[in-house]
Image (spheres, rainbow, N blue to C red):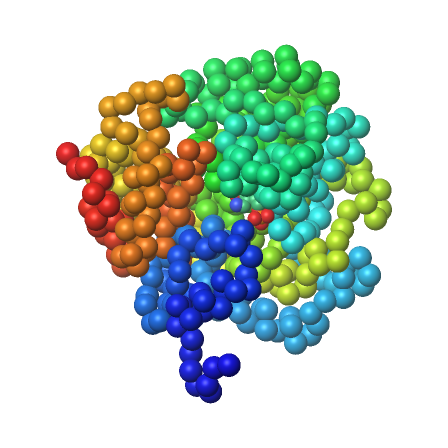
Length: 440
Ligand code: PMP
């Protein structure tokens, strides 16, 4: 028991946590949050952090964004839950209206709402299989689509996501991704290579869906070479397969557009969204062509909480905020400030093999300088972890990612101020210096 007025420290909370929270759920930093907002977070020990994580690309409008807070409060006062499958309500319908407007393509669309990204991906696959009467799902190297049984099978990386958790779902086929830093292929060549693999190993007329992240997230912020995405989408269309864009990490202005597909003029048949959609509340969606979505029989899709009214109210306030503050433009401005700073770091530290990304989804891939191995430039996960650790010690919330654990990623909230962004980038530079990564 704690005495009245005593606020537990992070160390105390960590002791309590260790006794009751499962070890499999780990945290990046040992500090416990008290408040977060703008581009910062304050922990219970009173320390301020610069936020380059946005809760993994969730709080694009910031944490505790005023309109979101007000919408959540007002909706909670009206009603918290009825279950849309029992007694429907307007905010659900309105979110689907917004999704129909905002997602690429002017064709008639339908949406279904869920709780998490993984649940949206699972449902997109269910819908594609039902609509096509086919079973095979094509996914890519380095893909990440979630941690449920089906989405683990769709996800590429074994450790930590799949290790010991099998057996996995069948009829999933993985093909090579365009990864310009490593495969050195043009978009057209990389697409031809992937398509040949699909045709040989799966067969065009067996493919229910081709599922792809327009820019891969957990797999390493891999931006496919220009032309790859449209070529894959065109092939899916010619094969009668459903082209599903997983925009769970890239969506809602993160890359400087509402959706990353738009940058290459791609109109997916189905698009999965979550994360940035609702300012931190759990909400996810599958949106797409009416004829595909409506192939499923009434009652075939749903769930107790999917499209919870508070989450829907938060989504509507989030979308309004993204529009009003033009946060797509803010994401592009973040890139304008950050990319030259990251390139300057790359000029200083030969371990930085590539600076890449789009908008406020930026990354540094770390390699062993001047060494080429079977994967191309030799990944350096140890240096990556050392930089991340040094950043955390300096008060910067910084994530890593990548199949090889060698990518540092920047995902600041889109409302981060110029000063906070500058401070965060300065801390990142200091983290490189402190981590003893060799400078030129
Ligand atoms: N797809 C992508 C592209 C993601 O980045 C994520 C989450 N990192 C997911 C799916 C799974 O989302 P969730 O964690 O909400 O289940």
